[in-house]
Length: 361
Image 1: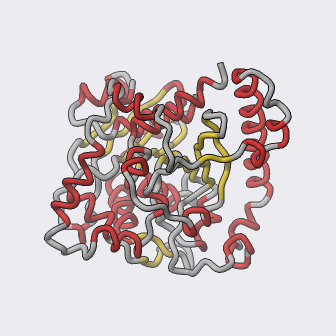
Image 2 (image 1 turned 90 degrees about the horizontal axis):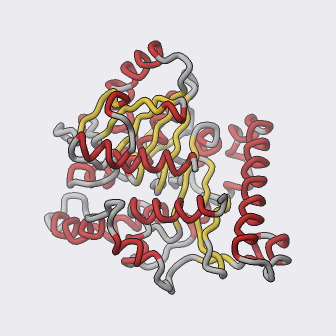
């Protein structure tokens, strides 16, 4: 339920007006601290960045920075800057160039305001959220300042944006959620070029216009999206309940409601154990270059950041989550399809979290 609220805040960053922002994020007008609905108009080399807003969220006791995902050609240019560049505060650390540049803009221009807000609301936490490109920027933003500030990034549909040297460190401050066959986490520099070609190609505008049509009309009231979510999708990633937990296998005769409760009890236990293990093994996480978990991954390979939870449908057609390795998104890539693009949309994530939330009722 809490993660669903953070998702709603990430969804709010796509607003075009203040009224639309309040509707999407479900935040009171007096709690909106700052916003800019337009992406920056500066050239990409001068730290272009997406639209964003900052809000006070009393129910989460948090000051939240929400960063928008790709919605324009300018933001597509940020995506397309796939070169890996040195991460300034970690030796051997590498990051996606465009995302790091945008994160720098937020550090230079928004972080001072966040610190001012913190003085006014000293009991509130810092949280940064984002979807798609915004997820990558939010993760790198948090990673860049986590050594000087207690901050957490909760991100949805993040791209691969940091290398293995930074990945262990990112587990301390980034929590990533990926919905089923969402295409973006699978994209690498090579795969991106295969889809879009050169970043200077004049055909990119036409390709982007066609591509972006799938991201329109993603409001919560869009009934078509809810209908589409219930389709029997051949391309959907499905895990056998037998392979996920023997405890679930033994309860196949139980009602769906009982099964939901049991499977999510197991999920909560796994998340708690994961968090405990992460707290007890911070030193091991930083020394990741020698970790077998990252063996065979090159220093220039970019990974999905943080602790990663993959939302999936079981063979019983119910929604679940499981923690996965970033390697999953390096080694597997399905042919780009409408289903994969639809699973990337905000509405599909909102639907998935609504289904997950129902398990607790």
